[in-house]
Length: 510
Ligand code: HEM
Image (cartoon, rainbow, N blue to C red):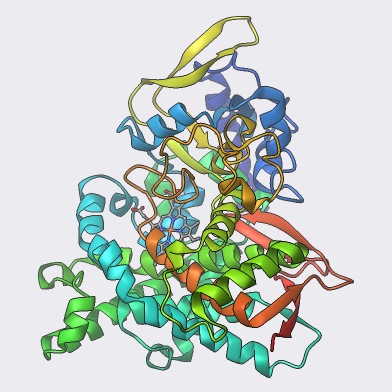
């Protein structure tokens, strides 16, 4: 007898029974029909063949607020209405999703404890780490970004292949940037083990299957002690999770220990750069865990965003040529003349459009902790014909903030919101330009207490890398390959072979 299956069946039955019987305040909100009694619409939302396959159709059919089915007929609210998103992300009536799936695959791996991600501990950690990510601090990292960008040039120049997968050199660049700029480590100092461990952690955390989704849906209603017990089960996912937790803790602790020693030995430039390593906090385990989160949060997101941007650029030679001309006239052909990236309109329009079209995290989930009412910018009509200008939600309700959906709203971005068009940022076609997230009215870096800590870091890094690469190379799409964007926690470009990556024909200019 397979006890795992029997155990799973009992839990699934009890949870299913419990969920179906829950009272629900959103059941009359219109939404797509469930595609499976067990998993509802979650496979369509989280594992479509291409990112947005279903989501963007639902957005057109039902508008920016609709109901989705989770597992066993549970109702989830999908929201891309601006007022509602702002309320959910900023209000204390919601907390980070505390499902098993995110516990195991995100917070347990990276932060280890959800407590670190919410409330007072989170607030203190952010305050400390913010020092390394202020506008002034990030400006100082400029030379590091230029150096890592030049290292990519060097790699591309050495390659004799007709087409190059741009993701691996970008991965090394983003990893080096965080290590050197924020932690004061060179890649040599970090060593091969660190690089291998990081790659493994990112690989594990970017695998998503129907099993993960089901575990997530069931686990959200179960006590946390059961999760801790389940973590000891010899399954593939839990084994991988255990390994990554161990490695992540090891790396975080090692960085903190070694830096503490250097700072205490009087290394003043490090002391300035690593001002977040305040002695009173160094002992704190939460501190080490949050450091680990910083180490990982900025790598894959930035890498995949730049790679997908270069893919779009390769498809549009005319815009690419114009961007290159702007780079050469602002920074010189070698890309070193002192210019300010922020004064380059095409460069910034291109970065904003890339972030709008490809938000690394396409949606985020929150759970209601106290009954509340979500305000809407525009009222909706329910399946019973009722008009609603606000939606009451009760404790335990899961809501999904549709970051990608918000960024495809025609009411905000224009009738061609589904098209990649950087010039929309220059020709006044963006509607309602009131501020939303920290950057360019986008939700890509979120909003509220969990706004991306490294958004300024990411923008400057993208500016430096794009100027270096587009200034020195012409990018074209290979004849026999194409890129599909799928989802696995973050957006992932996939080649026609099924492997992850972005193949480009790269030609040195001049
Ligand atoms: C294009 C690049 C990036 C994108 C699109 C991005 C996006 C995001 C998003 C959406 C969140 C919120 C997650 C949630 O609550 O559901 C987040 C959080 C975070 N990001 Fe980024 N990020 C990027 C780059 C970076 C970089 C370069 C760093 C650090 C060097 C970084 C560090 C963090 C940290 C520490 C958090 C957790 C913040 C908290 O919970 O308080 N990110 N990011």
